[in-house]
Image (cartoon, rainbow, N blue to C red):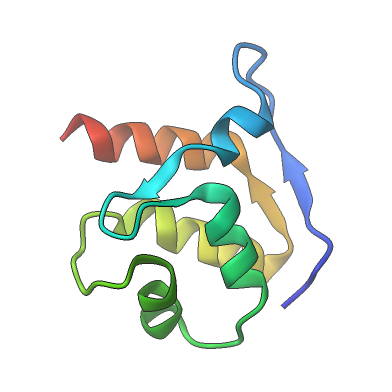
Length: 92
């Protein structure tokens, strides 16, 4: 996977760093930044890479984590979308 990622973040109220500090999955207590680092260092398929990040098989964080996995695979992370998906997950 690419070590250099383009990032997109248009929301003026939050910064990229704010989103990077958000917990992407309560099970693994990993932040978005930690998940990005882990996913950058692996070439495993999503299901196995998810276990590296979360340590579980639950589907609680599926949408934000799968979106992040795909963004990293394609080389550009949209932190605004990740922020939105995490907020949606937390609102359930």
